[in-house]
Length: 322
Image 1 (cartoon, rainbow, N blue to C red):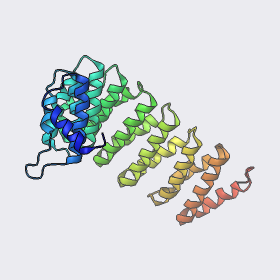
Image 2: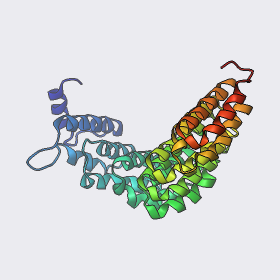
Image 3: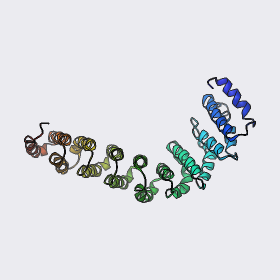
Image 4: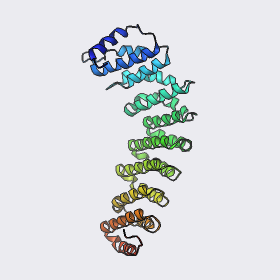
């Protein structure tokens, strides 16, 4: 297996059609893709050695062989749109299969392709929209995240409407994948930040575990940093969240971020109430973080210094030494 020349000779002899078993053909496809990776592209013709064999496997009778060949083609280094086209075509056919395993395998492969070649997958969007309501939540999650990767600016609002009901039906680990896809979509189409930010803030107020909530908070913070117009609304959503946040880590993370970004906004004073509420109502760790955030506002915004001094003096009588 580690002898490149021997593997290349083996592939050369077996790709002439002597293998009949579907399982053996799948293994041969894997060896072939290994040889292709190590050989690179033929500089004269621009073709890859053995690529014709992979393409011929897309017309095989066995579904597992077709899927293996399609996956091998999509995984090739520097794969071109021309090389992807036949693989995408057969995967699109599997999206409407009656077998859940084929639908899952196809949409998972397309989801991966969409990360690097979104335009190559756009022809499958109509088929994938029908999978959002699939009974298998894994298939539905992959379908929606693929659509978020391949969608255009005009389709964002329609996707958000479909997502509202979808999120309540899936587990937290799937929700995290969706949140990350929404973040990427917002960075891709910054003019749509309002609808995407509102969606994130709505799901932030719903029930969920720590990892899920952290993924949403991290996404909002990234959007605030990368999209200047989103700063005011993003900070407001975070302030609303810490009013009823059960996770100490997230509260302190948001307070720290608020201390850095809040003083730079047009009206820093509107955040003071949210911060001081944490001093009064939270545990010692969050209270200490809130005091530190108040001090940052006082140090960076001269107009707020008198008010901040009053609040900090009250903190001197706190029962907690920190």
